[in-house]
Structures are given as structure tokens and as C-alpha cells.
Image (cartoon, rainbow, N blue to C red; front, side):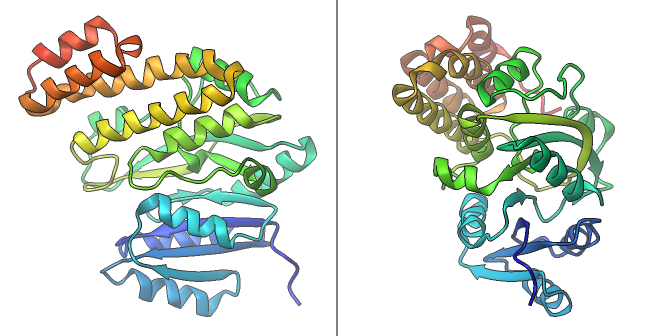
Length: 312
């Protein structure tokens, strides 16, 4: 009888037939072997499900769950509900991890009794992306040290050095800690990692950093990271901001660091909206002045109003 898995890897899958085999392989070929891989088929309409079922037949560590499309958050929450490992790791079905990722993170968390550990990433291109786009995505930290701190101390340090990256694919989490704080992914928004990861830091008793790029993030046309900025993006950022402010009403000692975070996140979200149609920009201006004035700089409002978008 197989021992209970020490790690659960959760991989949501939605129409990534061209990439999912390599993603699964990068997990199955890990130097650490006692894990389960939960493949959450989130209503795929291509041949993804067939590929997942093939993997489940050849490796007993692979388990497939299918559901009607619920989005990335819903798929990850399904994975959390079925997870059995002591630790949990989330990755996307078009990305890769290096072969020693699970071994290094598991050993570091266990030996230091961490709530979670985080690490860096490299960006890989899909062949259609140009170097200018690749330069916009930098997931390496130059000023963060591998010390053990409380989550709120680490969060503040990362924000100070502009080295906070919200992607949950850069986190290796103790599942008991995750269950204890009752944290799930927010449904019906994009940028759900902004909320999940920030609360994870705010709640953690002990966390640390491994200065290694274990994660390989793929940039491809049509992915969440490369589609045009829209009202769904800005509305999602505002939802994240609203949820974090509600969190600080209960956890007032975290208010200063949350305010610092929102001044960066909300301001950046509004700044990027200059690429939208004029009527949307006016709507965002009104929302910013009405509800987010504390977090949006005057310069950003001028960009929103007057910067011309050339499409480049």
C-alpha cells in the first residue's frame, strides 16, 4: 500500500492540449517521488482531457477531476478540496518546474518548520513573443535575503524593494497552515493571486525565500498575461482592494502594510487603463476619485486622462 503523499501538486487545465504533456512531465520527473498530481480539467473543449486520462493510466500518482468551467480560482479550489499532501503546490498547465523543485522546497520547509517558502522564476517564450514583451516579466529578486521572518515582515520587505510577485506558482505551502487560515481563491475575477498571496503573507508565522528560479513561466499569445487590458482587469483589482480593506478591519495591525501594497497595486492598475477606450477611462477616473483616491497618484490620473495609446 502506497504511503500518503507528502506533497500535492494542483494543476488546473483549460484548453492547453499543446502544452499540458510537458507540464505534467516536469512534475512526474521530479527527484522527489512521494507526491500526488491533481489534474483539474476545467471544462476543456479541446483534447486536453484525453491527454490527462492517459497520464492517469500510466502513473498512479496522477488523479484527474473534471468539472464544468469555473475559471482558474474554481479549479484550484477543487484541488485544495481533494488534496492529501502535507504541502501543496499550484502550477499552471502551460508552464514547467525544474526537476529538483519539490525536493528543495520540501526539505527547506520541513527543516525550518515554515508555513510556506517562495522562490523565483524564469520566463520562457512560446516562439511568438518578442524580446520587448519578455523584458516586462522579471521574476528574479536582487535584494531579498534567505532569512526566516514573519509573513508580514517579509511582505513589507518585498514591497519596499519592489520584489513582491503575486503568482502562487512561486509558493510552496504547508497545507495545514492553509486550512487553518481557511484561505481559498476568489471566484469570478482575474488577478486572484494578488489577493491570495498577500493574505498568505499577512497570516504566516514563519516564511522564507530560496533564491532559485525553480519555476519556468511560459508567455504565449492568448494567455491571461498577454491578452489586452480590459474592464475585467480593473474591476478585479478593485475587488482585491475591497477584500483586503475588509480584511484589515478585522486585522488592524496589518493595515499599514496593506495600505502600502494598495498604493502600488491600485495605482498601477489605474495607470495601465490608459490603453482602454475613452468612456472606460472616464468611468475609471470617477471610481478612482470616489473610492480609491488615497491609493492613486495625481500623475496617474493625468496619464489616465491624457496619455495617448498607440497600440505598441
